[in-house]
Image 1 (cartoon, rainbow over the protein chains, first blue to last red):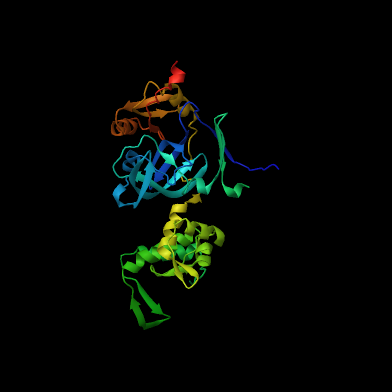
Image 2 (tube, rainbow over the protein chains, first blue to last red):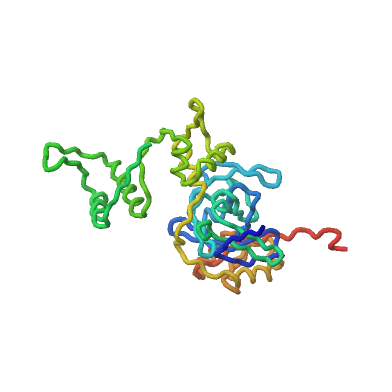
Length: 136
Length: 196
């Protein structure tokens, strides 16, 4: 049995870096920042660096409080509504920012991001394919 | 839970928006009877404006009490998912529920919070530029800038530094739109077998 999924978008990524790191735009109000973020199927939440929240004018501690587990430690995070753009795909979602810790990379997790899209990975070629369910 | 669809024309919306943006007090009148006139609380203006804004975006609007509850079917309809999917979400503990007899009830606040967390596909508010050159630059210069923040625009380095603040300051000074700013992680130590 074969299966066919239609992906509207295709992005190449750097296979020399650990993980699948993609360029994204993060927006809030009139502020927009171009950043890198790693696709993380093991992460429930989308977690971005504190510096980006500050840049977007977000008061981190006023967001929705939650916790994430990373490398054996529990990190307190606060969620805020933002818009993410990746290629021509855009979504409003809640991105979380650490209360105190510095994190080395931004993470695109399941809630709000992977849950919302179809995602195909060709790690041999270093290519991701993605799109929305309605593209089928 | 009762909802009503309300269709409103562009002219009506603009007129209402103008009235609601006015500093003058808002009053409700029944027909032409001036004696049947009641002044509305100022707080109501922002709520009415919010309703108009959502309607103009083509979204449905329902006014509900904050502490009201929904059945699983009502919540599934509201979230536009199947009831089966919603039950799995509840079973995973992502939306709290309580049992009334043999039925679950969900607080509207909890359902709305879950809706926000689910995310929503929207029209891109900006056109993202092609960042393939930026990514290529990062790939080629990763080792030179490990442990630093860098700002890249296509195939050129705009700024680099030990902290994000000084890099962003330089990005603002240069003023190139959608300059990519990122922290470059230190590479992991090579495994023994790879070093040998």
